[in-house]
Length: 167
Image (tube, rainbow, N blue to C red; front, side, top):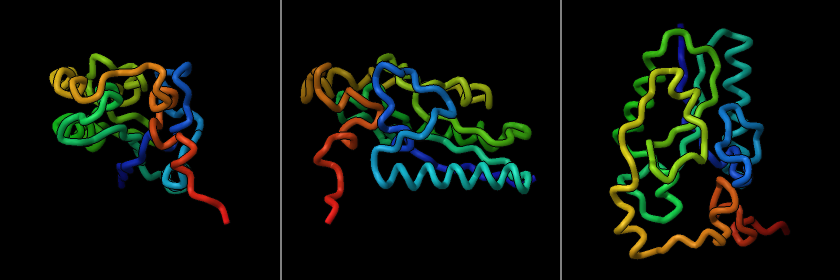
C-alpha cells in the first residue's frame, strides 16, 4: 500500500483562538496566511486521494520545528529535530493509518496548545521539552500574556501587518 506523509503546518489553523486550545486533530481550517491556505488545499487533496484511490495519507500540522526554541512562544510550540524524527518514524511504521490530520510538537511543559492524541495513536511519544531552554529564552524575551502573538495558534502571522496588501 502506498503512503504519503505530508508536512502541513499549524498555519492551516492559525486563527484558532487561545480559548480553543488544545486545538483538536482534524480541526476545521482557519488559515492565517496564503501559505496556510496552500497547506489546507493540499490536506484536502490528500483526503481525496485517500478516499478515491486508497492512499494512506497523514497530514502533520507542524508547529515550530527548529534546533532550539528561540522565542517565548516557541517554548510552547517547539518540535525538536529528534522528536520530529520520532514522529515521522511513527507515521511511516503505523499499520494502515488511512487518512489522518495530526499535530507535530514536542512534550513541552508550556504546551497544551494542540492535541497529540492522533500522533500518539500512531505510536508517537515525544521526549523533548523546550523548558530546558526557558531561562535563556526568557532572559531575552519575557512572556507577556497580553502580547497578540499569544492570541491565536498562528502567532505573529495573524497580526494585521503580516497580510499582503491588496491592490
